[in-house]
Image (cartoon, rainbow, N blue to C red; front, side, top):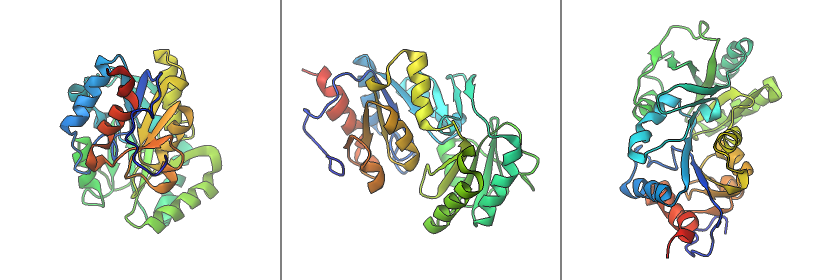
Length: 282
């Protein structure tokens, strides 16, 4: 069924106890909105006794706007799992980049032609507030970065470094350069086509599955995941049932159990209806 949009309710996983969702490109539209059907689908999960959680490359502060409309009570996993917090922003688990690697990472990304952001603690640092995708990220995360003249003073407690470019070739070259320079010392993957996220080697969405399984007492095989980008594959690999968005790249769709419609066509809500909630309905 990969690459198609199944509609048969028979294509279900009957033992799902938790749904873990990516945010951008999955839970929200390209305008960063939650649709009424998405909100209703999460409420339906709660009523069916199925837990719901989110994970994202966003900083944890960028997930807080989801808590009230979706009635989220589970931990929030930001920075691709680099920082997990509760709804009050208390840190439950954190994985930061080794301080000695921060400047070399920035150098590799800059040399590849990418703009660079640094997320240190709860703050977001940029060299240019008018730089590419800063305004878009401000809308998504609902807080502003701090503009600095240099990132060299921000090397400790760094949860994520982001390289930004609208040129896919630059992103690909930077990814290859990161692998060559650092090997398995860090994790580097794309959360959007124009972002290359660099985090602690163990900070990935697969580690979020392990954390939620351990803390909520739910086995991985009873967890469903849904996402659209390369950084979602790690959680697909560790969950019992995985759903790719219709807007996902072919290589992401190919490793998911099934594919739903796009985030502009209520793909999340359709997936919950067709694959997760169907066994709970008459």
